[in-house]
Amino acid sequence: MPPNRSILHVDMDAFFASVEQRDHPEYQGRPVVVGADPKGGRGRGVVAACSYEARFFGIHSALPIGRAWRLCPQAVYLRPRGARYAEVSGEVFGILHRYSDLVEPLSIDEAFLDVTGSRRLLGSAEAIGRKIKAEIRAELGLVASVGVAPNKFVAKIASDIEKPDGLVAVAADRVQGFLDPLPITRLWGVGPKTAERLRSLGMQTIGDLSHRRREDLRASLGEAGEELWLLARGVDERPVVPEGEAKSLGAETTFAEDTSDPGRIRRTLLNLCERVGSRLRRSGRVAGGLTLKFRDEDFATSTRALPLSPPTDLTEDIYRAALALLEKTGWRGKRVRLLGVAAGRLQPRAEGAGAQLALFGDEGAGKRRRVAAVVDTLRERFGSEAVTRAALLEGEGEEEEKG
DNA sequence: TCTGGGGTCCTAGGACCC
DNA sequence: TCTGGGGTCCTAGGACCC
Image (cartoon, rainbow, N blue to C red; front, side, top):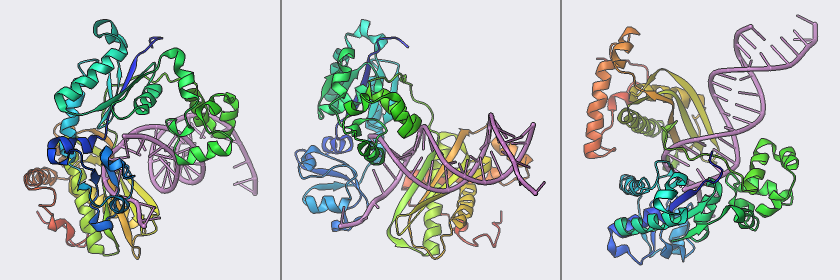
C-alpha cells in the first residue's frame, strides 16, 4: 500500500431524477420524484430519488411516497426506469475509467477511484476530480460531486459535504480537523441503532469518539467499535478493488394490499422465481442456494433458506424450492405484505451442464432449458408480465408435469 | 404517515467432527 | 452419566448502504 494514496469518491447528484430531467426537458426546473406510484396518497412504496426542486418541499429519498404526495402533489411522479439508469451509469463509468484502472463501483451512481498512479501523468488528484466533473457535465449533461482524500472513508464524506456540484479535497494533515466536528452518523456503518448506542455512551461527534481510548470502544462495542475508532481517527487502509461478481441476486415485491389468497401468493412467488431464474440464465450463472423472504401484515420479516443441489438456473427448480421454503414459514392463515426470493452461492454455469444432469437421471433438463430460453426471449420482447407459466401453477405437487 | 427493492456483511447458536 | 475444547459449516436475524 503506497503511504500517500489519492482516493476519489465520485457521487452523482440526484441521479435518477437528473436523468429524467435530462431525457425530458419539460421536467427541468420542476420537482421530480422517482419512486413508487403515489396513488393519490395511498401508495405503499418510498421515494427512490428526487430532484433538488422536490427537496425544497421536504421530500427526500426513502420518504414514504404517500407523504411525499401530501408535501407536493404538483410534483412530477415517475416510476424508476432501471435499464435506462444502468445505461447512463455505464457512460459515467466510461469517463471514470479514463483516469484510473482502479475504479470500484459502490452503487449504480457512485464509485471510488485510486488515482495515486495517475497523478504524474494527469495532474493532482484534485485536478483530476475537476476534470471528471467537467466531462460528466459536458458529455452527459449531468452533475456529480467529488471528494478527494488519502482514503476511501474520508473521500466519501468529502464528496457529500458540498452537494450538489461539490468538490472537496482533504489533505492528510487536515483529516482529523475535518472529521472531528462531524456527527457520529457520518461514520460508515453507523446507522440509527449504533448511533443511539454511541449517544447513550456520551458520544455525539466523531471527535467524541476519536478522543476515547481504543480499549473502551472494544469493551462496549466489540470489534466493530474498534473499527469505528480507527475510522474516527481517519485511518482506513481498505484498497480500491475493481468490480467483482455479485454474490447474490434476488427479487422481491410488496403487495398493493396484504393478502392471504393462496393463488395470488403462488402466482407472485412464481413470477419472482422467473425473474431470478431469467437473470441467472442471462448472467451465465447457477445458484447453489435459495433464500425466501416473508413479511407479514405487522411488518415482521423472516427468512428461510436451503441449498440447491445440484446448483440451477431453471425457474422450475427455483420455484419448487421456494414453495418448500414458503411452507417452512408457516404462512397459512397469515396476511402477507411482502415476498422475496434470492439466489445465493452463485457460480459460473459449467459447459455441458445439461449432459451432466442427465447422468443424475434428470433427462428433462435439456428440454426445460430450451423452454426457459423461449420464455426469456418472450419476456424480453413483450415485458416481464407477458408470460406466465400456467403449467407450473397447476397441481401444486399432486400431479407431475408430463413431457 | 407507515416503512421499496436491490444488495453486503456480521453474529449467534446449533450440528457435527475430532 | 455428564463432560472438554476447537474448528467448521449452516441457518436465521439484523444492521447497514444506496
